[in-house]
Image 1 (tube, rainbow, N blue to C red):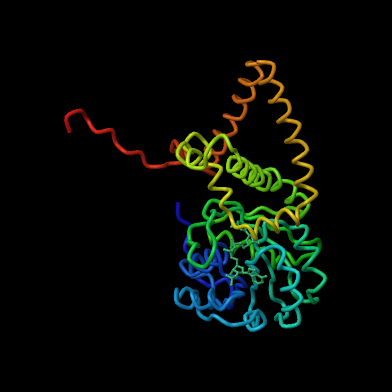
Image 2: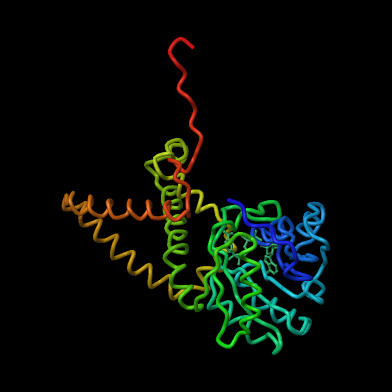
Amino acid sequence: MTAAVTTAPLFKRVALIGFGLIGGSIARGARVQGLVGEIVTTARSEKTRARVAELGLVDRVVATNVEAVEDADLVILCIPVGACGPVAAEIAAHLKPGAIISDVGSVKGAVVRDMAPHLPDGVHFIPAHPVAGTENSGPDSGFAELFINRWCILTPPDGTDPEATAQLRAFWAALGAKVEIMTPDHHDLVLAITSHLPHLIAYTIVGTADELAQVTESEVIKFSAGGFRDFTRIAASDPTMWRDVFLANKDAVLEMLGTFTEDLSKLTRAIRRGDGEALFDHFTRTRAIRRGIVETGQDSAAPDFGRPHANLAKKGE
Ligand code: NAP
């Protein structure tokens, strides 16, 4: 599926603060779709800024966050959640009146709490979270198609100008995303179960396997196709980003972790008691959830995540 090409730019100047997987994908998508007149970007390190300039994906790479936001109609913070507050404080006085200021952070309550107090009247603060990603990070990891058919959740505070929300919605829709609006708290609860807990489990299980003395590290890797490798993709995600997510969404994650622990105890009991029926019923229910995800286009129906399989050579060949 490809998103429709938009003819007139939606924004004259967009500033992307941070150019990793998400910032880089926004820049690539916006350019392909002709969504903006000019893209100005910056990143924390000179190394990333130099690489972005080399990639030639934006109109200007500048050295500071303050320079980036100058005269921008849309400012998007594409940086770890924990950095959003300090960056908001730094750029606040330099935002153009009437500009939309947004972010892409995986947690919304903490971002609103940390950013909102710094922002001046007369700018439109509309936090956002594109629920799309990979385990890769950095300026080379982005791609224009990342957001196609993925959800982007906007959490405009009460009283936000509907016109500004509609403009940001149109931007994400033109990048291919399906847009939904919810409160920051609800976002954080939903994402705690659909994203944050799965990451915590993956980080745990990969760490546990690594520590098992009876099974050597080489065996863990050698036999990983038994299921382990699917967890390792998630557990390879950026440590800074995920540290910040767990610190910022502590309450919702702890709540979901409580429920998860209870469910794990139920399965543990079923195994201990040899209760095959309980195990079978549970696994039947979870299989249906996988089917639902495929049916709604949130994952491919290809078996084994579409991994290529070698052909078995015919006898005598
Ligand atoms: P990334 O590839 O690691 O890129 C992060 C960017 O932020 C880099 O340009 C980095 O600059 C800059 N940065 C890091 N720390 C900073 C700081 N303290 N101050 C200013 N800039 C800083 O990360 P990403 O995956 O694009 O994630 C960015 C945001 O998107 C995060 O808030 C994350 O929660 C959210 N998100 C991620 C995913 C995902 O799957 N990855 C999905 C949805 C939303 P340098 O390169 O110079 O260090």
